[in-house]
Length: 245
Image (cartoon, rainbow, N blue to C red):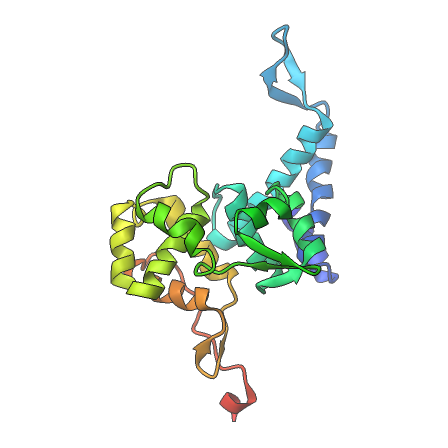
């Protein structure tokens, strides 16, 4: 239902966070038609508990986010709110910088907290009405040493991926594979799923033969060398008049 609604909304020009929010209605309508809907939890008297309105909204949000991630991976996946924010920000905006209000709405839409918290965690940088996704290298002081030392339990999965990408960019893909092997990442389906999602979400573009986004360059190189199960987009054609001439 939510997926079909998203396709209809896209056809009439609704996009970005508005598209994400617009699909809440159809998801909620499924719940309303089946009302009353009961929680899997019981009340104090042991009876099935009626689902509260805020729980219904959360269920609709989870369904919409699930569908957006499934588009990127090809099946249902579960990450964490911070990873979901980074992934869906790339998918939604196709740029590292976007308006602060749009970032705030996206964070609320996916249940990923708020922009202030994301900025404090060095996931984004906020300034004068805009928000910028920080690159793996921008986040090195925050995440790299901890991940390399194996302290990954409870961390957002995107932190782990960014640490591997830092290793690949600075020391080469073979060294990054060594880190991945030590942490058991290359056999971790959630990690592989995140890589698959990221190579589809990050803009797959080149100018004058060079990758526009360094994240795309690192991901494509690492996957080509060590993750053949990840399906890569076709190598992009040149996009400048110089290259077309």
